[in-house]
Picture 1: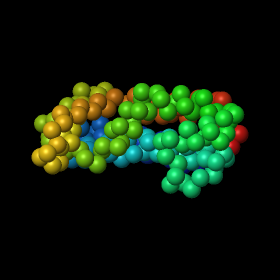
Picture 2: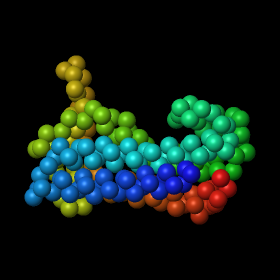
Picture 3: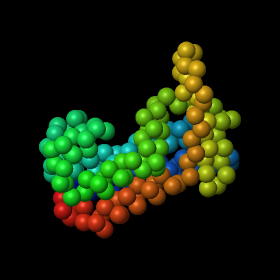
Length: 170
């Protein structure tokens, strides 16, 4: 069941990635749609990881799904320290690519993007997202570079786990 959800999330992420690149093209020039698809893109990428965690939970701790949070591995380590895939999953969780996906996804609902803050060069879409929705926020704008490597990383993660027998053992 979870593997099907993971495949669907990867497929959806690819769709939103393609749409974001399409709408960012200067001939199309629909930057509001770029933002919509990028938000969905990062939510779908994070969903892949969330489904992996939910799968592990269903076979180990059986916590309520809403209790499977970012400290899940700490709990798993305490209660099931001999879990076969623990070290592999911890390594994935600490990967800078997954951390990047998490950080962008966590703040995607705050993005304000003006048309002049989107740059397209065929392989990369650069966006400057202004997060300060209220005037008290003094943080600098965040630049988000979409270069198709995030989707590659999530696909590679799923493929690597598959090759190691992760999904078969579930």
